[in-house]
Image (cartoon, rainbow over all chains, first blue to last red; front, side, top):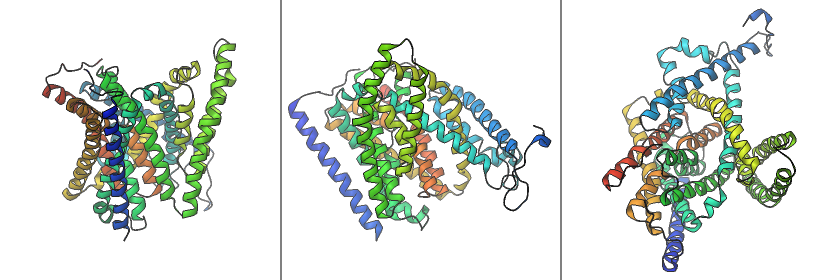
Length: 40
Length: 440
């Protein structure tokens, strides 16, 4: 089976980094929100 | 064993209770039973296309209160004596110590097997997929805790501890089980197999770091959290920048100078494993983290690493680790799920855990440029929780952050998500009309 994962495609890499950061921020924000709501 | 020759332990009350020889007898019987049943169940589950660890875990559950205890309390007392004969729980404590030693050595081996070169391969994509596959289930687990906390938690446990712990428990991937499934299916050398292994390895490192922080928060007073945080960072830096170069140089010298590994080198490694484990236990994170990190910093291509992998793997996985399965089985009471609503909650936990891990990995893999099919394979593989999840759950139960009922539900979740991996992979292969990977 061939993986379609590109190693160094610059465009995809930028898009990947942005998506990665977006997911990370969204996830952390969700956890903080939950802790805020549930802690009350 | 002859009771006359035994030395009775006299407690403060003055009544003679469990003798030392009885404890040894019960522990030996427990170990022998769980090893034997584990072998039988592993064979059965292997025939069903499941990883052997499933059989071993179920053997532990079968010998505990969930099955043997429910069928025949007399039979289970041959293994675990009733409270009137063992009021201090000496047998359970002894099994726990053996189990902990087994898990510490096992995590050292997992660290040792973690090939840094493999991590470097497509490292950016692997780390991005891995982190996303932690963040998404972590966040979904935290959201789920809003519902589960009032239902299943002890009021003495803070919501923050509960939510963070549930988040970590949802995010675990079992690197060793995943590696085993990939090898069994001859997928380990395929590109998608390599990415999956790299992701799982990165997952392991990240998840254990997260767990160490969460344990710090759970053990809370704020000063202690800062101590744990600072201690963890200092420990990691010390291992990476002092121990790793030292080991690199020392191992190089030993391997160039002598034929075979000298005894002092082997003894030295054991001392380091135990010291590293003791250090992280003292810092306030679990002992296994120290052993794992020591395994990571030992060069995996060295003769020393290979020697330990060959010589230590069998006694650890065949003899010591079953004590962990027995200990987990002793603590798991599936009977606590005694009505349909609780089984419903258990199903929701399984669904959410799968959604978070499979969904998170799938989306991240797609965003990293994988095809839908490969992203699906990665999602299915990353949802394998296996033994790692049980280790995390036992830590949660020890800390009191999860109740025995939630512990039982999460153990079932760990089993189900691990068991669904192989059939789900086959389904995906059939659906995409690809040749089905054979079992090796």
